[in-house]
Image 1 (cartoon, rainbow, N blue to C red):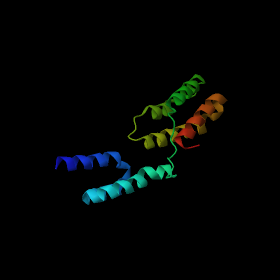
Image 2: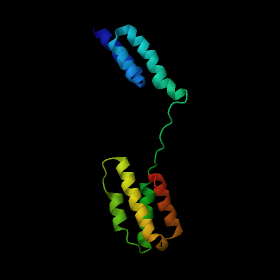
Image 3: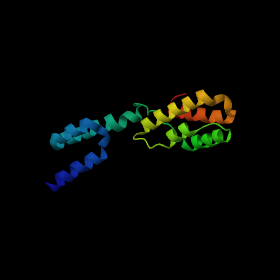
Image 4: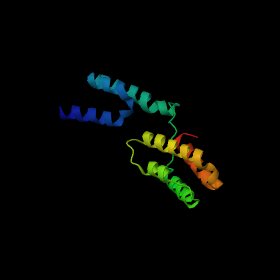
Length: 134
């Protein structure tokens, strides 16, 4: 019984990308397990080799650029308290962070763009692009 359990665990570890096909094959015993492993390989790993779903775009960590732009805006005499508060708040998810900070940057630029140096505006625009709000 230990051998059977060990072999099943090995197949699960090796072919975890097989998803539901592999899970169903495990119920069917060794015959189903072998078939499930083959199906799982092509469904999970093979799909990426054959041009499976592309990875979603990822935002780079723009927090250093954002904080630098905030400091430059402060040095220009602009009130950055609201934007700084949004940038320094702890968020539950990265999606929430990107949404809230992106909205705060957009609002800040709308109200203060003319008072900022163009290099600072470009840094904020870069941050907006990374937040998906450009």
